[in-house]
Image 1 (cartoon, rainbow, N blue to C red):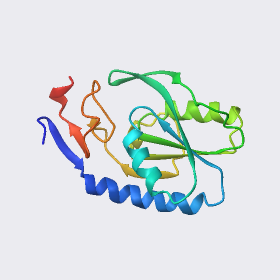
Image 2 (cartoon, rainbow, N blue to C red):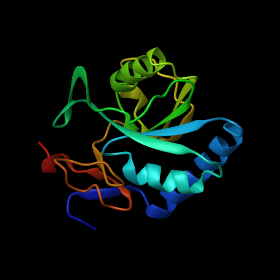
Image 3 (cartoon, rainbow, N blue to C red):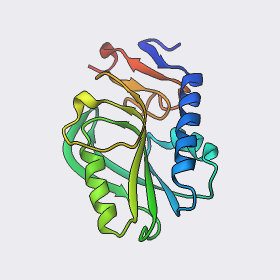
Image 4 (cartoon, rainbow, N blue to C red):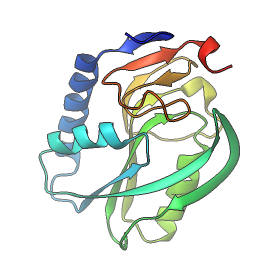
Length: 176
């Protein structure tokens, strides 16, 4: 265990949750043209695990969308990397590591609908409902957490801790 970290969800708990979410998604998207859309960089481990458990033919792509500078939300959403091909007529499942304010995903959903997506749903490993500024419908939610700064399983602080196989609370003394 690294200094300054308290495990919130173990590797096994995360994998069990991925399995549970994948079963729901498989059932809900049977017969549809599913595109998993991972939000870089944090969603990569979750998306990799999830797509191997979803029992469907699917496509995947990535976007890099941010409204954060350091550990604070600026409120301004920027698309840093866009999808590689047309999403017209696709059923899109946005894969996110954590949802805080909802600003980024609300903005992104509007952009994708304007580009002709057939449907758009969200799957996230973590959600912080008490930080939500925009009412956001999240169809597939792994865990709801309190307003703690978390790292691991793709989530970082200053690009550190992304590779941890578990999710941990980062002690405030490590980032303040």
